[in-house]
Length: 145
Image (spheres, rainbow, N blue to C red):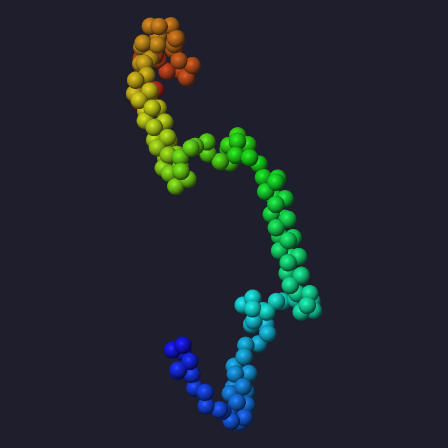
């Protein structure tokens, strides 16, 4: 109701109306701009058929997506093919989980290397011979040169 009190209801002359219309028509965007902004349909179909053509395009896209989803492999197959990680963690945490597993493996290997038996012990147990195939003596450390 308040908006009706502010409306100017005074009559305008036909000249003012024509000038106003002319001004708005000059500022009107061209059809290609309207098509680029998806306001006008970019089609050659008759206006009466444009909505049916648009619906047909949507239906084709829907059918294509449904076919793609039907052919989509299930999660177990993607895990088997190493496409998806075998994790129950949230996706945001999976990267951190992978890094943690990597560091845990590295720590485990470092611990095993630090605690491995010396060549002398292996010779005593009969696992190594007195001379290693590389031509080194058993009491020499192969890591030192």
